[in-house]
Length: 154
Image 1 (cartoon, helix red, strand yellow):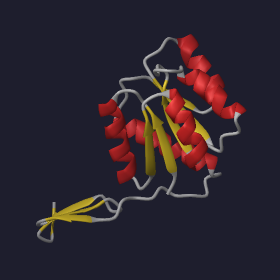
Image 2 (cartoon, one colour; image 1 turned 90 degrees about the vertical axis):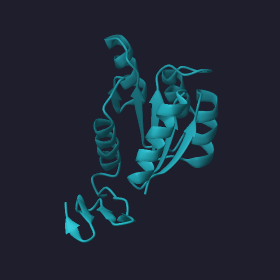
Image 3 (cartoon, one colour; image 1 turned 180 degrees about the horizontal axis):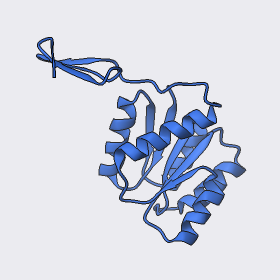
């Protein structure tokens, strides 16, 4: 399980990302601006930071540079925002990892997060899936991608 820090000022987007990353088995912290994000990065030592490039208080690119200068232990950064190519280049140069433009597909973002985590660990970890869950007669097993209803495969 990896601790992930989301720094995103859109509360609904941050909540959705948090929920989905937790379903994937990660511990997730959320900050709504760069100042709080830097504080959480220092105190919680995330393995991955998901950043919005247009943040209140600080721009995410400045955040990345500050994380690097303060010796933050995060292994990777990930920046997201609709942007022109020069901004994307700045994001790559400061985050040194990945970039995806908003609006992005959730499955793509989750795949990129897992790829960054695998790359950071030298490919030694496999993604952890959420435990099987039962809702009444419905059983969902993320490991096998199976959903059953009262024991019948669907």
